[in-house]
Length: 309
Length: 216
Image 1: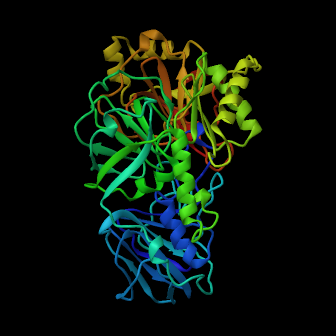
Image 2: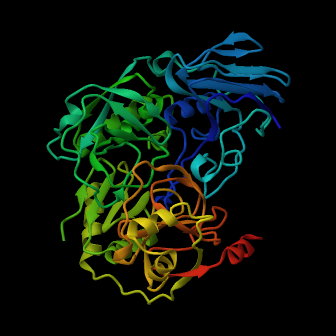
Image 3: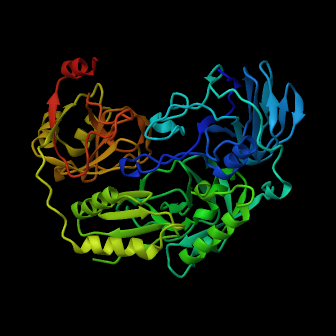
C-alpha cells in the first residue's frame, strides 16, 4: 500500500479514463469532472494524462504516505501541505513513508486533483477504473473513499518536471463563460440572454442554475432522448440543469443547449454561487474552438485531444 | 422520416418511426465501430463522434444510408419469464396503487401477468429497464416527490410502462412488486440480462419463493 486516507472530506473518488461505450446500458462515462486538471497533475509526474488520480471535492482531504514517491496537486485553488509545511500546487512534490499530505478546502473552483507517480490502482470495470458511485462501479469498491482506505500506487522514482509553467496554470476567474450550441439553430434563446448562478444543487451528475426562470417549459413529459454531459435541460419549473460527467443517459425534459466539447472540463470546477454565462456557437465554430484550445495546450500537453471530452 | 440533425460539435440525433428501427440502426453502427457512443432513446438515436477525426457529414450520411435500408426483422425471441413477488411487505406502493385503481391485489396481479410485455429501452440509470405493454387499466402517475432510494429488484409502474430498478436508485415510479433475479451485473459483459426488443412475462411468486430465490 502506498497511500492511506486520514480524512476523506466531502467526496474523494478515484477517477481516470472515462468509461466509454456503455451509455446505451444506462452507464455514464464518469471520469474526472475536470479532466484538464487531472492531466496537468499527471503531466508533472510523467504519467499518461488520464492515469487514475484522486478527485477531491470542495472540503479538502488528508492522506498518509507509506512509500517514497512523487505527487502533484492541481485544479481548484487549495492550500497544499506536507507535514504541515506549505507546498505549492502545480509542483512535483517528493514524499516519503510517514509523511502526511493535506489538501485544504477549495478557495475557488470545486475539485482538486491529486496525482501520484505511476498512477493509483483502482477496480477496473467495463474498461475503466473511474468511480461511478450510483452503480458502485470502479474506483475503490465503487464508492467515495473512507477514512482508513488503503490505496496502491507504483513506488517510484522521480518526477518528469518540477512545475507547471505559469501560462499553463488555469486562471482564478469566478465567473465562467461556457460556449454552447443552441438547440434552436439560430443560436438564440433565453438561456443565452442572462447571467446564471450555480445553485447549491451541484454534483457530478449535474448543476441546477438559479436565475430568472425560463417561461414556457411546462411542455408536459417529452419522450426520453439520449442526453450527454454538457447538455442543458430545463424542467417545467424553468430552472435549467447543466449535466456533468455522471449525467443520466436519457432525459425527458426540454433541451436548450449543448456545451461544446472544448469547454466541458470547465463544468467540473463550477461551485455554488459562481456566476455563469452561455455563449452561442454553431457546431462548426465549436470544432474550430476545440482545435484552437488543443493548439494552445499542445506544447505542454502534447497529444491532449482525449483530455477534452 | 426526418433527416438526422447535428446537435453540437460531436452529437448527431435522428428520429425513427419505431423503436425497432432505431435499435436496428444502432446495432449496425455499434458493430461497425468508430463511434464514441451510440445511444437510443424513445424512437430516437444519438451518435457521439470524435469531431477531430470525423466530419459531421460522414455521420449524417451513414445514418441516412442505414435508415434507407429497412430494419432487418430479427428472429422472434423467446419471452423471458421474470418471477415477481407482489406483496405489500416488499412493494410499498402496491396497496395505494390498488386503492387508486379501485381493484384488489389479485386483480392487479392478473392484469400485470396475463399478457406479454416487451423491453423498450435501458437507460436513465444503470440497470433501469423500461418495459412496454402495460395493461391500460393500470395507468397510474409517478410520485410527485421521488423516493430517495428504491431497492434493487423493484418492479414499478407509471403511465403506460413497467420499470425495473435493477440497482437501488432514487426513483418516482409506483413500486408494485420485487424480483429476486439480478438483471444487472457489472462484472459480466454486457452487464444487462435484458436487451431492448426482448419479450418478457411476469410470473407471480410467493414471499417464501422470493426469499428462497434470493438465497445464494
